[in-house]
Length: 76
Image (cartoon, rainbow, N blue to C red; front, side, top):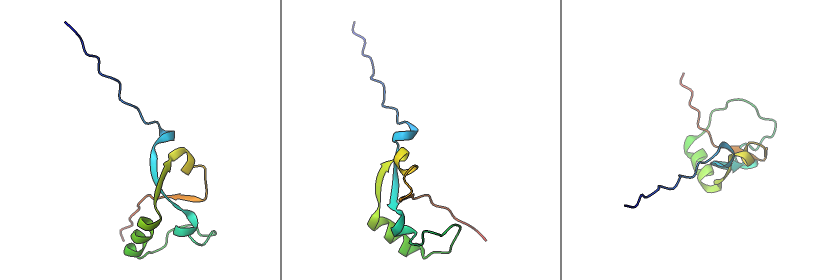
C-alpha cells in the first residue's frame, strides 16, 4: 500500500505579495498633495490601466515613488 503525500502549498508572505502600483508622478502629479480630491473615475481608471504594474508589497510600501492602487469610495 502506498501513501501519497500532498506537497505543501506555497505560502505568500506579506512581504512578497504582488500588489498593483502606478508611479506616483503619474497618479498624483502634485508632490505636495495630501487628502481627498474628487476625480473623473473613467479617466483615472484609464490612467491606472495604462501605467499599472505589480511589485512585491515590501518594495511598494518602502518606495515613495510608487502609489498602491487602493480604492476608496466616499458616500455623501
